[in-house]
Amino acid sequence: MLRSILIAAIASATPAVTSAAGECHADANSVSTTYGFAAQGVATADTAFAPAGPFAQAGTATQLATSQTSKTISGTWSVELGQNDTHGYTPDVAFGGTFQIDRATCTGEFYVTTPVALTAPAFHVVVVADGDEVRVISAIPNLIVAYVSPKRLNGGASDQAR
Image (cartoon, rainbow, N blue to C red; front, side):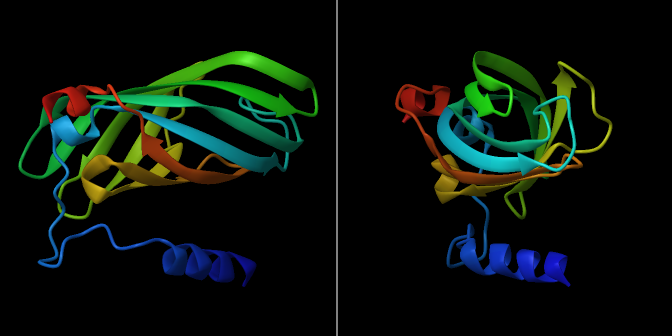
């Protein structure tokens, strides 16, 4: 029941990402950028990303689209962040992987390949405002994270093309 309430709360708090015509306008250029973010969460058990207990993060996430079809955008992503958790403050945490975004819905799955490879998606994202923001939830077991809406930083690949 708690899971249903959480899903309903997320769905109601997430703004529509499509235009009035019901179209997603994401393309390889608009998602190839760097976002700044902050996050708070709790690890319900030790994970490769945080020890059990509460944690906070702040950093940047960079996406680079490497292919685009009429249906999907695929590429690589990397994160650099500082993290404060039950083991103390750790600067310069880095990890990354691959992603695929559905061009019809502006939703995507992000997979981690480093420091540990996960076979299931690590993050589910929704591209908002043509790539100016993204909404993110963790799909990593035992890692519950509330991300403050990541926003595009100036100077990203798509910013230079604008």
